[in-house]
Image 1: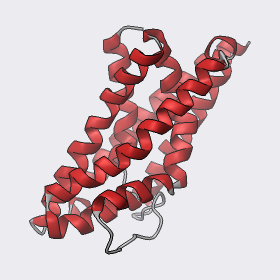
Image 2: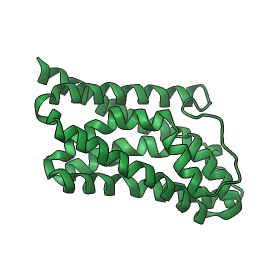
Image 3: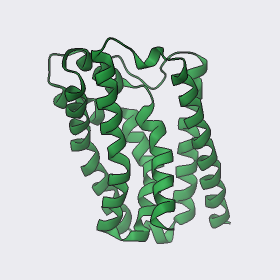
Length: 211
């Protein structure tokens, strides 16, 4: 797999998770109404503090057990099923016009940075995403080596969090809601379609490898 192919895979799959409404996103909007884009960057930084160690931990465990070489089919199958599950949740949230991925919004007096940490570390869907979908991406990053693979994966993934959270916080500061845009549900459905494609592909690849 080339860096370009891997980049397309990471960005396409990550976008659905980054742009999906959830507790981190809604709290970011709340802070954004008061502090603008600066609060979005702080929230994203808090998210980074949780996400980067989690990726390193998962990668270390995966590579130390040589699971990527011994069980590539099982990893592909688990990743594919996880992606299909998240695609289904995303479609359901658009069809039902409610946020099935979000817990109640935490409107505390804590800083955006602390909120970014708390709403990442305590979000079961965030953890589930990395233990299913993310494991597949981490396994694919092994092509470039342990350290280089993690750096490439994280760089391709994290910039979207900063751009999205800072951008939506800025929009919230101007009194406009991203969720009210008629194009936002269409964007979520388009991303869900991308997830379905990768989900089917990974699932089929995993089944073929195991047969």
